Length: 448
Ligand code: EPZ
Image (cartoon, rainbow, N blue to C red):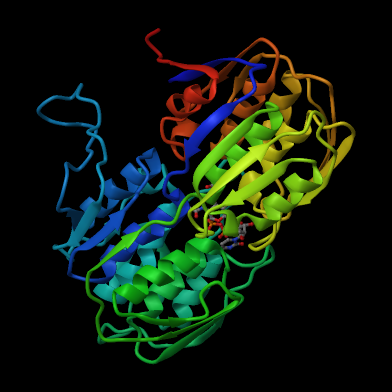
């Protein structure tokens, strides 16, 4: 398993570009299952999760028509590295007979669940392994199933699989469904139900829909494919079903969580960084918190989804309060990164996690680096310290890994972040992209 070796204490400066969004690209790729025509996506990030989704879609008869399918066990040359993903990615669901998303792929990427709605709607049936929990907590899919059942799907659980079918005759029926749960809305649940509703007979109203930018991006692609959707980005989405969808060409929105991670990196290394292709309009809650901490974020350009942002850090970070909420509130996916940054603030900050109350595996690891953290249930008091010190730490999940890399960039001395395969799920070649900013970070393979 690869690990990162970092020498910290070096302010970051220079320019870095934000990649396409992982969390937008995954449901966008699954939307190719809704048509028998090719769907082309541009700026798809080259990430482990994306490659897993492409493998799953290929197994479901929806393979790439351009570029090599990045299949790891290449029979000709098993030692060959994965071919670069290439851009764009064009998918074509040429074979609609295979509808089983198997456990051994779904267990590596729970976002596989977003193939469920498109397959039921288009193919009339689907078998998708039930995604398990993960390091950030229990990850139920009850809201997904509630929404799909409201559209007339019959859903049973058999041997750990979700076995679903459309009503006799094969077409879902539009309905009104409340999709809110104890933690608010569901992002991928909204994606599943909205996608399925595009081919249903009649009109669907999704109440308490997720408002995340990734849902808006999916609605934009579905609209290009011929779907009739209004209200995406608001808590009420209305979908008028159509008989069929056609192919489309769409560019993935930039990754707001990657952008937010870079903002934190600049702030906590007391650097000055220019971030290109920054979807600043989707980060207003995070920018509000950064500015309260004394960080300056200047936006250039006139496209708020592809802006150029210049971020500069104060000599001293002010302590703040952060509470994660569904969009447009502060994103849970930036909670760990902000904790790393606030570990160096001048005073006590309070972070409360309202989406995944157990999302704190990074707390113990930050403590090993000298952070002073006090957890009480879903809340952590971050008592700022003057410095962090390098240590060996263990990555546990995607955003906790990013948090530890940020801490290593700011800490005095050497930090080793183990199990960076967690990081590779959501950040493409991060070490190669941070080095031009002055970071001392190298990847060390298992063989070293
Ligand atoms: C998406 O996951 C993101 N993943 C997550 O990002 C992100 O943290 C999450 O949304 C919240 O913003 C992708 O888009 C691939 P949810 P999703 O359904 O859709 C509960 C990352 O780091 N819930 O919005 O699976 C759930 O337990 C990842 O990039 C139910 O109770 O999350 C949670 O408490 C991590 N029943 C809350 O809702 C359900 O049926 C929000 O979950 C579904 C969810």
